[in-house]
Image (cartoon, rainbow over all chains, first blue to last red; front, side, top):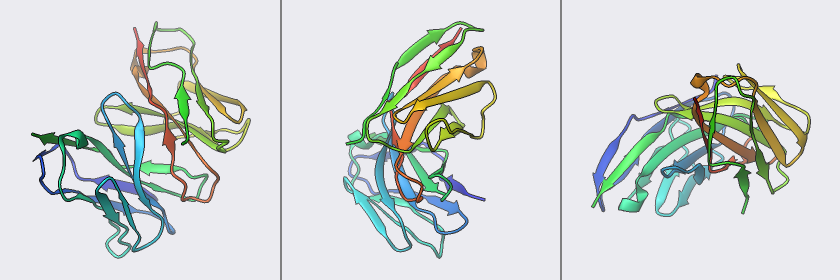
Length: 112
Length: 114
């Protein structure tokens, strides 16, 4: 079956620190992979995506590389800001009507 | 940009009431989804729809039903609200069925059942 496993949070960093949030997946076939961000009181926003092995998704200084050999899609950012404080979700799609499988979310707290 | 609009940000209802949550998208997307989000449980899929008048059960459909009479609108119905349905409800839509299209989310409805 399909599933996504994320590192548990919360993750607490100081401003300008390096961020890694781990995500591994189990999937049949060749899924597409996504990272979403949820700010307090809001819905989920698409952060980046990768649709095939070795693709790198990037947006707003965040990056993630689709690693088929390790079934991973880790989220990284070189220098976090207080405004990056949010909950981050890793997700994959099946080919069944674009149904998504979400990780449990990782809360990031960035301190000034 | 895709716009997914949920009719209410906050809603308070009483036990036993019939509750309607409305969701509208403006990008002609085929697929629409309803999730609930609870602390420690992440997002759980309630129902989804891949076409007008079509619906499929998600992981937790009990106590809910849905309606999709028009392509742009997907309604979630709580037939007889109970306190354990107090939650954040998120609607999403996506284009097509080829597996690499992102889902676009509304801002959510925080529903309290008293």
